[in-house]
View 1: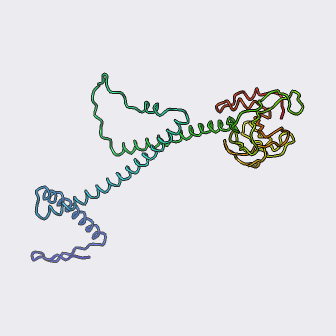
View 2: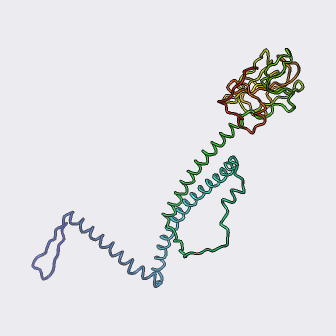
View 3: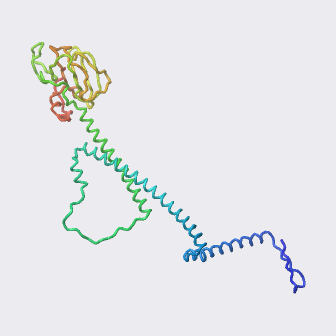
Length: 322
């Protein structure tokens, strides 16, 4: 590119030549100058116009500032919405913790009034004092850190409560597996121990409790467990055996009809059979036995207990019998 410069005082015309690189540099310089000029005009003129209330310029500046405030307000709302969502999630976790705490306290035997005493505010009255130190308003980052810390603590406490509740349920299930419920409502006709055999009149060990009842009377499971067998035995007649785990087995003998089959799960109080007089029996009754590791024990000790095995299984002994 060439530029010709002519003047009356000059003897000849001057010629200025520019290449593409020089033109590009000149254009960039012009853009920089215009940007700097526009910035100067904005700060020197528009801001002054906004402060002094110039008719046209102040309205333009007000629109620009309003747009900036709108963007800033939208950003704050988005952050507050995210914070509100986190707080809502924490509140839901705290509600679940409160419900779980009530269940766990009930299983552990903690009374509601004891919980109220633990959470009650300190009693008013008495001497109080100390310097007043006003709390500083936390920043957004501090709030985020606090929410994150509380969320982690809530998760940890939830896991802890779940573990404690699981252990307490295990203890409760263990007690439910102990045969301490009467299999039949009625008096005991013959207890555990030596007696005169009704057929031979000789002294013999009676290995259970006899419950006299009419044929067809319902027989209930003394505890939850798994049906071990439902076979016919020459001495016991129609015999039902229920395995309660930990070496505990209950027997229901001389039944007229068995209502469950081997492998069935039964719960405490479920009707599992009906009274009869099958096998070695002189009349309709239920012969009820409790065995620990195959050794007959006195069922009366279990029926009189409160859910715990009333003796050390390691010391269980005695004469085996039917």
